[in-house]
Length: 314
Image (cartoon, rainbow, N blue to C red):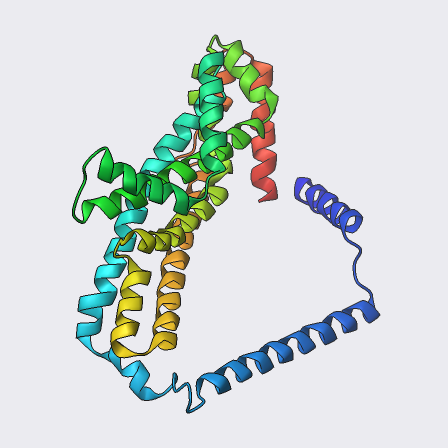
């Protein structure tokens, strides 16, 4: 009965938000889809025809043959891929840690901490990533006296970390604010302070709720690492350009690089989806229900009924 009621409610909500298309609308949508697909295929055919033109000569077997040679991968693509992953992994770890701390600072009950974290987030979120990379690069030269290959890596990591930590901080803040008010009140009811409630009740639930947005930001970090070629960092895009300059096959190289980025981002998204499903299943997620049992049995019983109804709907 619960499942049927939930299905009816969902159907009613769908009918209110979106009118079901009639026969004429369905035919019109199909015509638009077919015409759009044909236009897309026609545009792709024109692009391929232009690239296959003898004047351009970008789609011949000779242009693709370097990717069948191990030397191209060993000397260019694999080192570039390692450089990209190195900068991305370091930036991801630092951005998540700093983002959670900044988000908690913005939610803190201490006014000074809240103002400082808010000013930091608003300032660095407004600066382009490439500009921060340049600032960090020259700061490393003139102030920290970093040299060698560590200098461009430092600039890339600092630029990516500062910007993306601010974005993650805003995700944390919005995720906590999206939770029901009763979650915070439950923490107060059992004698927790505001910071304890934030750490043990609100933040774990917010992380689970905002995980898709965090994954999207991690993909952005991976792609933005390509900007580091402007500060001479040897990442995948720069190494691909070096290969294209040496072999004279720019278009095939860009296609291969795009395929590599797509595969990496797809794999990252799949892993994140698995983690999200694991957290939402409750195997490792933190559920605040048991915390309320001793303080308010009626509230605990109500939350257990809601959880059971949710599982039935699933």
